[in-house]
Amino acid sequence: MLALLPLLRTSWSRRAGSLVAIRLPGGVSAGDGLWRAMSRYRTEGRGQPHSPGYRLFFNIDDVKKYKPGYLEATLNWFKLYKVPDGKPENQFAFNGEFKSKAFALEVIKSTHECWKALLMKKCDGGAINCTNVQVCDSPFHCTQEEARSLVDQDRSVSSSPNEESNEEEQVWHFLGK
Image (cartoon, rainbow, N blue to C red):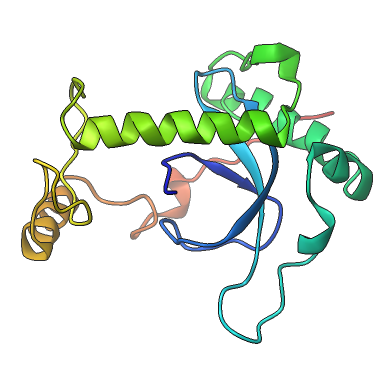
């Protein structure tokens, strides 16, 4: 199953869009209508080791047991990360309680069904651009060349903050405990 859902990785980072096998202990609502799923993933490839602690994490209680303070620190980060930009602190559904693996799986399944409906034009996506190269029977399907052209057009309109950013444009914020 593929789902468009931000993952909170509790191990090594991967390139955006990577498809990896994960173990899903649970998730949390970030207060903005979006859900973040906690995840641990295996290193793909024969003979490579699992990510550190992969075999330890089966549910949210395992995260509490083997990574004490991690869930609280994660919640605190989501609460405050927009504050330096002058935005208010995020509020959380369920009083910030991390939900179980079963609950997180239902959120993923629901998200996947909505994604499929969106790509098959069974619902109104509004301004969402559903152009894709993977779902061949989607009315939004395009060729690799068409996709590359769209990406190149987008790059020419807006430059990435990582490209040639000068130090004066970078602002660092520190929040006390």
